[in-house]
Image (spheres, rainbow, N blue to C red):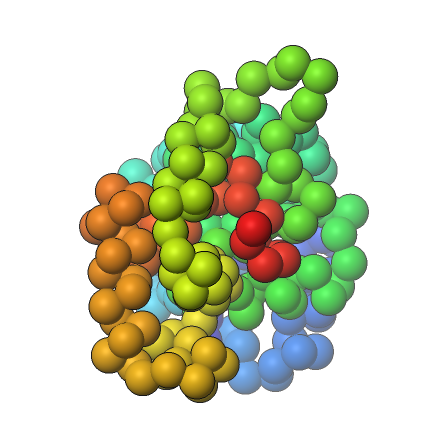
Length: 220
């Protein structure tokens, strides 16, 4: 597996590289210091995952993410950031990131994020998947309430299956975990996608993440 790490701080890149390779020495970490260099490297290497700092020398903030998703829309991106503003975090998902990791997170959190995203899920730390209280609005203008209404319309079994889907689990794993057939799982997922207005599992995960659903614990 090839991971492209985009960050303009050499010491930070070296630390992340050591963490990743201590987990699996077979992972190749390719380094870039800007969105421009990232664009060049994805043409030269087969990249499976991009780890992206939002503050780079040539772009900053969401512009960095937008630029990268513009020229490599099909490569999953995990944002690495020193910020932990809940609105920024949800905006990164809205603009196509598959995960968010604070630079203050633990080694275990980083590896958990990589595993989750590579398996097809979205990674958001549990404490970051709840919208601000005290009258503050969600970044999606009521999407949380809309999603809650959808959840209430799902059966208990469908909510269980959605929880597995949010973790990026394949149908076979869901089937084994719930002791039901794969065909039953497929039928439930089809109904769930229809209820969410999603075309596929990835869109369903995006919708749930943007609505503030806590991916790390069972759904209500």
